[in-house]
Length: 115
Image (tube, rainbow, N blue to C red; front, side):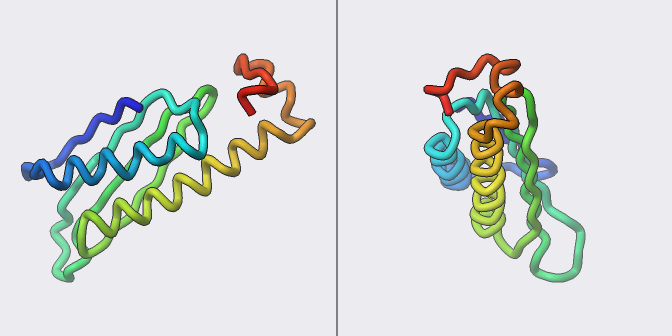
Protein backbone atom coordinates (compact mmCIF):
# COMPACT_ATOMS: atom_id res chain seq x y z
CA UNK A 1 0.00 0.00 0.00
CA UNK A 2 1.25 3.46 -0.88
CA UNK A 3 1.23 5.71 2.19
CA UNK A 4 2.01 9.43 2.08
CA UNK A 5 3.21 10.71 5.48
CA UNK A 6 3.28 14.43 6.27
CA UNK A 7 4.50 16.03 9.46
CA UNK A 8 3.29 19.56 10.12
CA UNK A 9 5.70 22.05 11.77
CA UNK A 10 8.32 19.43 12.67
CA UNK A 11 10.49 16.78 11.08
CA UNK A 12 9.61 13.18 11.91
CA UNK A 13 12.54 10.83 12.45
CA UNK A 14 13.00 7.67 10.41
CA UNK A 15 12.06 5.36 13.32
CA UNK A 16 8.63 6.96 13.58
CA UNK A 17 8.13 6.84 9.81
CA UNK A 18 9.10 3.13 9.72
CA UNK A 19 6.76 2.40 12.65
CA UNK A 20 3.88 4.12 10.87
CA UNK A 21 4.56 2.28 7.60
CA UNK A 22 4.65 -1.12 9.33
CA UNK A 23 1.45 -0.48 11.28
CA UNK A 24 -0.59 0.61 8.28
CA UNK A 25 0.82 -2.13 6.04
CA UNK A 26 -0.86 -4.61 8.40
CA UNK A 27 -4.26 -3.20 7.39
CA UNK A 28 -3.88 -4.99 4.04
CA UNK A 29 -4.64 -8.23 5.88
CA UNK A 30 -8.15 -6.95 6.68
CA UNK A 31 -8.97 -5.58 3.24
CA UNK A 32 -6.64 -6.06 0.29
CA UNK A 33 -8.20 -3.44 -1.99
CA UNK A 34 -6.74 -0.39 -0.20
CA UNK A 35 -5.38 1.85 -2.94
CA UNK A 36 -3.53 4.49 -0.91
CA UNK A 37 -3.31 6.24 2.41
CA UNK A 38 -2.50 9.67 3.79
CA UNK A 39 -1.10 10.19 7.29
CA UNK A 40 -0.82 13.65 8.84
CA UNK A 41 1.19 14.14 12.04
CA UNK A 42 0.57 17.36 13.98
CA UNK A 43 1.69 18.94 17.23
CA UNK A 44 -1.11 20.72 19.06
CA UNK A 45 -0.36 23.82 21.10
CA UNK A 46 -2.23 22.40 24.10
CA UNK A 47 -0.73 22.72 27.55
CA UNK A 48 -1.29 19.09 28.52
CA UNK A 49 0.92 16.18 27.44
CA UNK A 50 -1.62 14.79 24.95
CA UNK A 51 -0.65 17.14 22.15
CA UNK A 52 0.25 14.70 19.36
CA UNK A 53 -2.41 14.31 16.66
CA UNK A 54 -2.52 11.63 13.96
CA UNK A 55 -5.04 11.86 11.11
CA UNK A 56 -5.33 9.05 8.58
CA UNK A 57 -7.30 8.72 5.35
CA UNK A 58 -7.47 5.38 3.57
CA UNK A 59 -8.68 5.28 -0.01
CA UNK A 60 -10.61 2.16 -0.99
CA UNK A 61 -12.77 1.66 -4.09
CA UNK A 62 -15.93 3.69 -3.64
CA UNK A 63 -15.07 5.12 -0.22
CA UNK A 64 -12.57 7.01 1.94
CA UNK A 65 -12.07 5.90 5.54
CA UNK A 66 -10.89 8.39 8.17
CA UNK A 67 -9.52 8.16 11.70
CA UNK A 68 -8.10 10.81 14.02
CA UNK A 69 -6.66 10.49 17.51
CA UNK A 70 -4.85 12.80 19.92
CA UNK A 71 -2.52 11.23 22.48
CA UNK A 72 0.65 11.79 24.50
CA UNK A 73 2.80 10.04 21.88
CA UNK A 74 2.59 9.55 18.14
CA UNK A 75 3.03 5.79 18.58
CA UNK A 76 -0.04 5.56 20.82
CA UNK A 77 -2.10 7.66 18.39
CA UNK A 78 -0.98 5.47 15.47
CA UNK A 79 -2.04 2.35 17.40
CA UNK A 80 -5.47 3.81 18.09
CA UNK A 81 -6.02 4.94 14.50
CA UNK A 82 -4.96 1.50 13.29
CA UNK A 83 -7.58 -0.09 15.56
CA UNK A 84 -10.25 2.31 14.32
CA UNK A 85 -9.40 1.72 10.68
CA UNK A 86 -9.29 -2.06 11.09
CA UNK A 87 -12.84 -1.95 12.51
CA UNK A 88 -13.97 0.25 9.62
CA UNK A 89 -12.34 -2.08 7.08
CA UNK A 90 -13.99 -5.15 8.63
CA UNK A 91 -17.36 -3.38 8.57
CA UNK A 92 -16.81 -2.38 4.93
CA UNK A 93 -15.96 -5.96 3.98
CA UNK A 94 -19.06 -7.28 5.79
CA UNK A 95 -21.24 -4.79 3.93
CA UNK A 96 -19.93 -6.08 0.63
CA UNK A 97 -20.56 -9.69 1.67
CA UNK A 98 -24.17 -8.87 2.53
CA UNK A 99 -26.58 -9.84 -0.29
CA UNK A 100 -28.26 -6.44 -0.02
CA UNK A 101 -24.96 -4.84 -0.95
CA UNK A 102 -24.17 -7.16 -3.87
CA UNK A 103 -25.14 -4.40 -6.28
CA UNK A 104 -22.59 -2.10 -4.64
CA UNK A 105 -19.93 -4.76 -5.10
CA UNK A 106 -20.86 -5.15 -8.75
CA UNK A 107 -20.67 -1.38 -9.25
CA UNK A 108 -17.20 -1.33 -7.72
CA UNK A 109 -16.12 -4.21 -9.94
CA UNK A 110 -15.67 -6.73 -7.14
CA UNK A 111 -16.07 -10.43 -7.78
CA UNK A 112 -17.35 -12.79 -5.13
CA UNK A 113 -13.74 -14.05 -4.90
CA UNK A 114 -12.58 -10.58 -3.82
CA UNK A 115 -14.97 -10.57 -0.88
